[in-house]
Length: 74
Image (cartoon, rainbow, N blue to C red; front, side, top):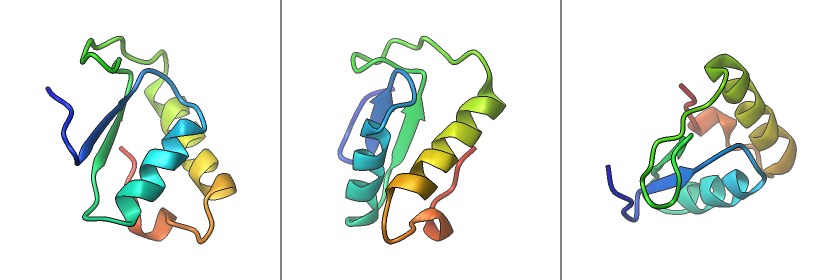
């Protein structure tokens, strides 16, 4: 898997995810993968459900206007 203008890798959940999500929402969209280093190395996450919940909460709390209606987390 390689990064491109519609793909972003994040090793872990952080507020930097909000920056990528806003950038994607202001363009043609994209996909953010959590558990992958910038170089494409897969490191995984400890708990996928918890990671998804934390990501959704971070986007809900930090991004205005709310982009959760047009976002999908899986």
